[in-house]
Image (cartoon, rainbow, N blue to C red; front, side, top):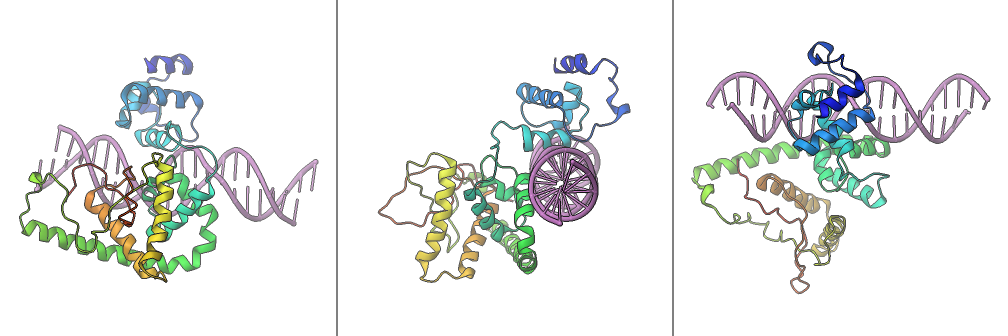
Length: 260
DNA sequence: AAAAAATTCAACCGCTTTCTT
DNA sequence: GAAGAAAGCGGTTGAATTTTT
């Protein structure tokens, strides 16, 4: 059906996609329309079949990119807000160029957008100082990977049958405080993100009068490890108990833990 | 007003990871 | 478990736009 629409508009002379080759460059509104139509009918994914089913002369990669970065209905348009900018800076200082990871904390923003924004606004300012920190992060990252492998090996050795584990595994020592509590009026993801990051700052100052960067790093490193450990995290809603005064943090997504 | 320089950002590329058969 | 396909990621490019000279 979509193919028919396209044929009407582009003429009937273009049936041999393989011979003609893939189109490149900026997308036309007609192409956008076809891709949107395709996603409506077939959902996201299977991008390589877009060309076959719609007649669009774009490869799967191009289609996916166009959808993810531009056509997705949940994308937030317009300028990056100061609030979002703070988050980008904060997360980049911890995670470096892990744009997709950073993007997960900014609903409606794409990794490409954040990457472009950071390069445009901050790259020059931080170039010199970031060179060293990038390297140290890379070293830390490798170290963590190694430690993680060791842990996994340990788990295998202990012959834990994870298939029978119905509840979440016990947090490793030192990670017990990772309870995630949001005020119950925080339904909006943006609010939750805001709350999380402000809480992060508060928590570091609560734990000690003068926050040390090393402790803060450890906390983020923990988060990063947890992210790997559970497969995926997302900010979610739960009730904040004022009495417990627990350090707010990320809430683990309610899925079966992923081990590998 | 026009040319040059700087900036922005959509899109591509190559590589890696994950999924499917 | 292996191989191929698909999806995802980060770096880079280059055309369009904006700002500066």
